[in-house]
Length: 248
Length: 288
Image (cartoon, rainbow over all chains, first blue to last red):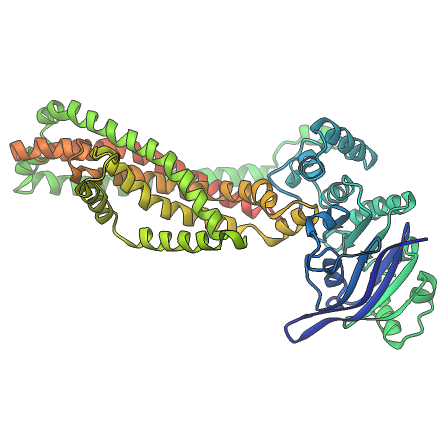
């Protein structure tokens, strides 16, 4: 199995604060890597670095074997191969659900409007949102908005999907509909890197779980190992607090 | 079942009592407002009409017969103001958009233009409009350049466009800067280039956001077109001035003012409503 994504000793700092410490990671095709850790541990920054929304201070990032941390790379071309879903959805409020989804296929990937619309409607139907195609995002619930955001990133058939705490802005009832959408993607074989606070969900989808603490991966392994039989004291402490908060 | 229940609902006796009280309170408030208005406005009217100079004021500013006589020429002048406003407004929109885009671009090739756009905005926003009108209207013909029109209406319009483009560019730029960076991040992560992001994601939202302040500028533009009268353009102001200086009766100015107000008051009311709607829409936008 080839690695879709590989990070080698990635370092990132904001001013004097080092957010990622020489971090390495391999994400094989069709697998899901779940990043867990407290807020501020570097999960979101890591995803934004992969997406080239942030530039790294040292190390290398490879996408399908090509070094994308090279400053000479065409970032727009790299991003065409990546999908990103944000915690706060970031749908375009002035565009309908359908227009949100078809913008990139039409303008970036050069598909015809008919082709893009047909594909978008197919995806909307699959995620039970077909009746929302012509609505504006502010008419939708948070869970529906986030599923639209997921569809929007899927519409360009990305090699790798990055999901940044996609359920953190949702109430517990809506969380499930979004998580089940992500589970569907996983069973389709989508390669993913996810940051999440939903430990039960992490157990279900993760091929590898990485626990981040102050920009270091202090423990990694299968969900079974990391979440249910953690060896590192910091992981144990974190999971104990999550458990107390009733999220496991 | 719950629907059935709600259609069968009839207000309780306590609710009926409350409604009666509310009606009583609002009746009382309405009568207080009416009494107070009649008293204050009536007093002001009496003071005005019984003051010793009132007859002179009426004859000098509110001579209805004379007002009727000059009305057609002032309206004709106002037509010039309106033309100037709409033609100028279109030019201002295009130039201001260009300036705003140049000021917000990060493209290295456009760096000199970014500096020039900033300098342009600083100069034309900071200098009095009347100076620009004098400079362009009298200064440019004095150069005697061939091929440059010396038509005062044209030059006056150019001067107004130069100044207002700077104002409007700043309004559009503030709209562009008000769009949350997460919108840009979402667009860029979909593979859109920075230009596409501006065109399809940022600008449409920014323009929608600045429509109310732009309507304000549009009202100001209509009023400020009156300033081109100093070049000798026979607009509403100039037409009124010609008549007034002939008779030493100032009713024509009042006629011109009323004509401007007939257009600007509805426009400002509409603008206020647009701003209110905009504000309430933004407040319900939540996470976006």
